[in-house]
Image 1: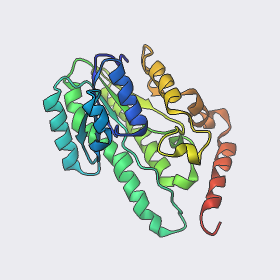
Image 2: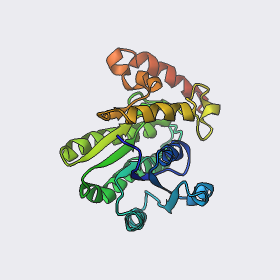
Image 3: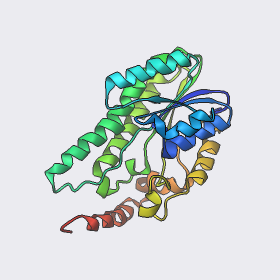
Image 4: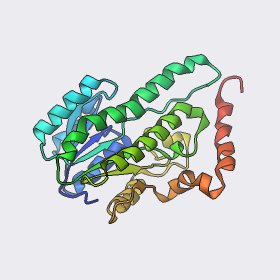
Length: 252
């Protein structure tokens, strides 16, 4: 995938990995719009002319359609859509009250992804070539039991991405899945000292994205053990290790 000279929208791009990826596209000479619930987070980047911003709430179908109309009106040459809005919430599955967190997670991570793709796919299909990038997680392939619905939602995005890629085969629109490990953003480095530094992660992502042909899945080295744990026979041991975090729940 060539990330230079493109016109890209990064939904969920006002912070963290999304913002980092948006900056990499912009540094390569692409026009980049970031979308999120609080576009003010990137006011400095907008003022400097690095990025544009638009408001979107992916849990609201009307907001997604309004953002689509605004972006396409500004940039009819839009040819890259990255969708990565997400929330990560701890859940105690012994307490039925966790259902509120579960519903919010599915609404943002899975249904939000589907809404964004539904909104922009017809436009992308009308282009001679275009790219879609969905963002899942290593947790989609090896659960972190403290965030049960997060893993389930990202596994859902993985399955949906596979289906979308099959349905768009031969159309000129390529579908790529980015599978991050823990990355040191939003305080993750405080919870997980092994979290990969953001810029190191982005360096590897850009290298993999730029390969020809672009891989169906962009899996950085650190994420390989999560993505392929079942194949490699390490799944049970790694899941047991990750389950130790359940000791932090009340009553454990």
